[in-house]
Image (cartoon, rainbow, N blue to C red):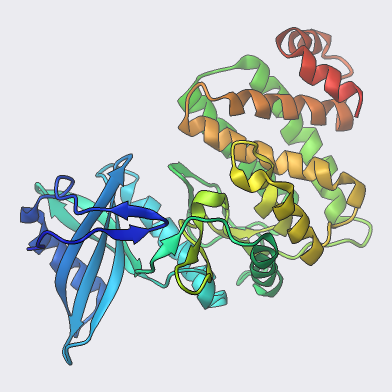
Amino acid sequence: MAAALDPIHVKGRELSHHPEFYGNHEEPSLAKAVAEVLGAGQTIDSIKWMEHSAGSAFACITTKSLDGRQKQYFLKCVAVDEAGEAMLLGEYHGMLEIFKCYPSLVPRPYGCGQFLRGGVPTYFLVTDYIEMSDTLPDPCELAKSLANLHRTTISPSGRFGFHTTTWHGKVPQRVQWDSSWVSFFRELLDYALQKDLENSGSWPALEEIASTVLDKVVPRLLGVLESNGRSIRPALIHGDLWEGNIATERGTNRILLIDAAAYYAHCEMEIGMWRCQRHAIHDARFTNAYLEQVPKDEPVDEWDDRNRLYCIKMNLVHSAHHKGAVERKTAFEDMCYLVDKYAPLSSGMLLQEDLSALFPQAVEAAKFH
């Protein structure tokens, strides 16, 4: 049984003991399950529950080895639902893939397990416990770390994708292996769109413009990356890289990435998230620092449009999480811009009129770019 414990710090927040998420009567079952993940020779000495939100809870677990040495681990639990196990397994495999390629960039993941809470399975992930600050790192240092990850990783299949489903928040990603970035991204974007429609409701204008983006803009804008002698190498990306998933270790300032939604992709996909104005990492210093390490792919003059396209996926996923979010409108406007530039509607006058009536500023902006 865990005793009352002093506050500890994770990502800059003081987190006090919170027994109400899982009462002490749950801890024997949890302790046994965690010990099975960590392996023989370690026993659970204490469990410090921390703050919880959105159906998740976090704890610092202290273990003791046979020779008396103590070690701390971080525990992430998710509330029971059908997706709980799959979400944490996806995160575990993503973090493990990054750890194998770049061990200092993520807390070491040890595995997933489950314990019974009120007779019902609850799922958890165990990683190294590291005291972190949520202050964003120096842009240049972050850029160097990401560039190293993107340049040195090699897809085990030689293709884009991942060996298991990973999750962008609570939204699963379609990441089946594909030798073509065009077809891979088309499936990734289409699945994000379908999840948004499921969670945020039907919007015929969005569905119609998205169809043109998927069938015409994606092949045109991304196809040139793999034509005329050009090629792109699949690089391992974090997949959900906003400031909430970036931290620095207290005392060392080592950059750490958490909550991975990883897969092998065009490396420029990683910073599509940074275009989103809701994020502090939208600051141009971060993008500029990255581009100094990893220059824009050819054609360079289409880089901003690729960045816009990649950001559409991020905004649709955000909208799928938050019904009514303005990011759905932003994604729609960005689609209008790209369609107008790369696949002008020749027979869709009614649709074009609908777009103009709904978002005249977006359509006007498209005419001047």
